[in-house]
Image (cartoon, rainbow, N blue to C red; front, side, top):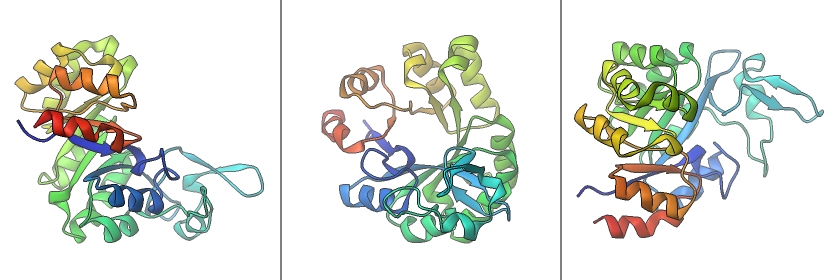
Length: 237
């Protein structure tokens, strides 16, 4: 049986500010092997790590990520003195220590993200994931050597059902299928496996949920707190 793949959600946000350099550093110290991050483009089209499309400013208001350039974002404090890092900065610092699930939040970020990954020669240590099917198709067109994963939220999963959702992932030649954990059932796992995809549900933060999902046969878990699932690694061997 292959080792369960545990992915630190937003770098491991339980302990440190999400998508921050401190979060990835802490995950490395914990012995985490994979981390997830969210990418949005700045005003000057630099891939930056931030989940929401807007960010709080010191004056108490907020602005869209795309209203600020990379230098302006790098000067903001997202908590604990941590700035908004660029994808390049994170991959340069941690690309040899962690593997990355890079979630694309915007279609027009695909080319910029792929460019950074290829320049740093990290295509073998990266997965590109997205809720946006067109982004996955474009990523495949540009760099088919970079694995891709289709994200499915709980509402979509309940509406379309496992067969349709899995077929969508297969249509874009995804290697990974990433459904919300509450939508997942044995039917989902079987359907994905039949299409040659690994199943990694998100965002799983309770140990009992993790155990249930492992019993269903999932290949990994995305979680805010990877370390609490380390016992499952030993159980899964």
